[in-house]
Image (cartoon, protein in one colour):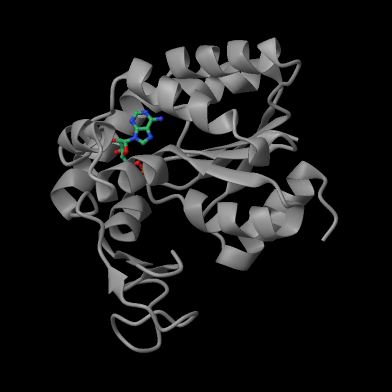
Length: 216
Ligand code: AMP
C-alpha cells in the first residue's frame, strides 16, 4: 500500500505518519526530514535546500523529485510508503505517478488532513521536536510535561528554524497557492479521503485508520 499524507504545514502529517507506521509497518518518507538530514550531514543538497526552507519557499521540483525517487528505490520501501510533505505541486504528483507506474505500483490513497488557517499558525509556531526520537510537542496545544524535555525519551526539544511566525505565514501562503490544487487533482482521481485534522490527535488517527480500512 502506498499512501500520501496531504495537508498544510502544521496539519499533523508528521505526528500521524508516526502512528501509521506503527499500525501498518509501511515506511515513512518525509521530504522535509530528508532535507533536514542532508543539512545535518552538510551535503550540497542540504545547503541548497536550506536557502529555500529558511524563506518558507519550496525547493525546486527537479531537486525534490530526484531526492524522493532515490529514497523510494531503497529496499525498505518495497512493501509500501507513507509520503509526508511530498508531492507539494502538480508536477511532483505527475512525476510520482509516472515513477510508480514504471514499477507497476500506484498510490492507493491520499489522506487529506484539513485544518483551518487560524489554527495552523499557532500549531507551527508552537511546535517543538525532540532531537533524539523525533517526537512532536506543541507549547500551546500539547506541551511536554517538563518544558524543553521530551516526555518519550528525555531528549532535548528544539524549534525548527522555519517554524517562526514570520516563516509560518509564508509557508502557508505557498501551501494555499501551490499545494492546494493537489486536493482537487486527487479528488478527481477518486483517491482523496478527507479527515478533520482539528480533532484530538487520537481521534485523527482513528478517523485515518477507518478511512484507510486499516484494522487496529
Ligand atoms: P516540511 O518538513 O514538510 O514542512 O518541509 C520543510 C521545508 O522543506 C518546506 O518548507 C520546503 O522548503 C522544503 N520541502 C519539503 N518538501 C518539499 C517538497 N515536496 N517540495 C518542495 N519543497 C519541499
